[in-house]
Length: 401
Image 1 (cartoon, rainbow, N blue to C red):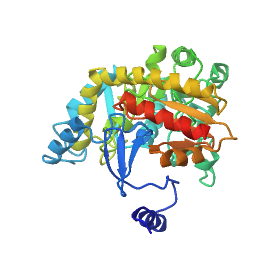
Image 2: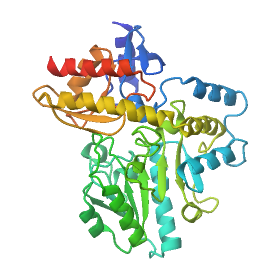
Image 3: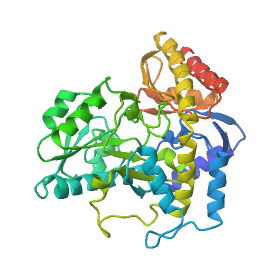
Image 4: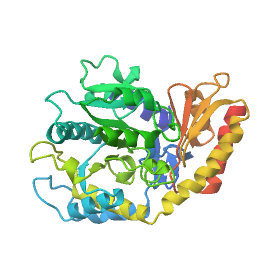
């Protein structure tokens, strides 16, 4: 038995089977490349679902983490610490907002947004008690906590976990007419991913986000944009909403906010929205801890230069040009995406998304399938152009074999 086989067997024996990872065991990583326990290198074409936008072990982020590790890592929010004010101030400024509520994971940010919207609905909008509704889109993926899966349309995420949390209305993604019909006087928020990542990098029709923004303003409803995967440079802009010139009422951030070092998430909004909370009504022991704030501050500083957004846009153009050529081959049924992010639907005659992912792994490229037929491509924004080209060539090699 190889080292890889032994480690996978141990993992299978002692960890709950909530994931179906590829049969590779990573031991080291740098930039856009990872190395397994056998010493084989792989090009990372997933980037931790956008958590690794800045690549593995970015020197600036590692340095920020090391420096903070030597000072203080956790105080809890029972006390102030010297990185908290700067983190909240600078993240609010990056988003053009006023207030930040730091959490840890993306799911926590979504849960926090739901609580925020309901609180705002009762305190500010005047919705009758227990009547608040949040409108969401079919095909969404906002996490796997109990409340969040209550408005999922994915049977794998939802089945056997009821009873479910009420208060949500699901409409088709990209359908403004359905959205307009679903918003009532008791609606407190519309919660959307500007691009649906887990569904296969689904980009809505042009004008959809702007239409939602107009509708929510018209009806006095919060527009909550889940930019946990799409935000912080992935699509060639700081936020995916920017592609339609849209500024939501609430940003949900995570993934890349932790720089690939640790989990960091946040809800960012105006004072009229997040100001509804009072001490004791919400919180998190680790939310906004000194280590998270130190790394998050460095992420914000890196985004302020615009270089990563520009790189994602330029390399994204290359990625989509090459994928368009592959799409014309008949080996795939659709290609979608924006910036350095794409979903490739594989023709069933070629194989499933899982089969394609396994064959790419054999060629030294790591991706992950979703919903059976789709392969997602999302390399770190620091990937070199020649490496990106090489990875696409490996995809073509698998599809044409």
